[in-house]
Image (tube, rainbow, N blue to C red; front, side, top):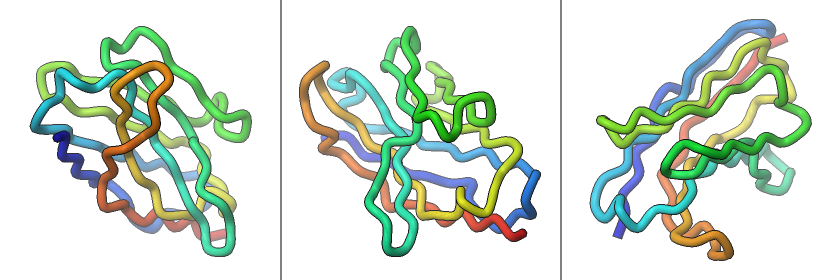
Length: 119
């Protein structure tokens, strides 16, 4: 099993920046890819960005391209989501999750961290 702990959320003004962290522990050798998801009130959960555990491949949803950067620090088994030029529409609870294969589902989830962007 993989355990995930997110941190770094908070309140920021539009145009500001935040960096989210997701620390993984346990059977990290079983991770294929880690993703950052978000869910705003009344909206469906969406995949914002993801990275392969070896760090070689990243994917972003269109609305965050050029503003968000996902990266991994191997020594700490931690994945970061650097969020710049934040918009009020970025307000949501952000979750990190992992999946164990290229076709598998995201089946390990963190507890979530709130990001609020004020206008």
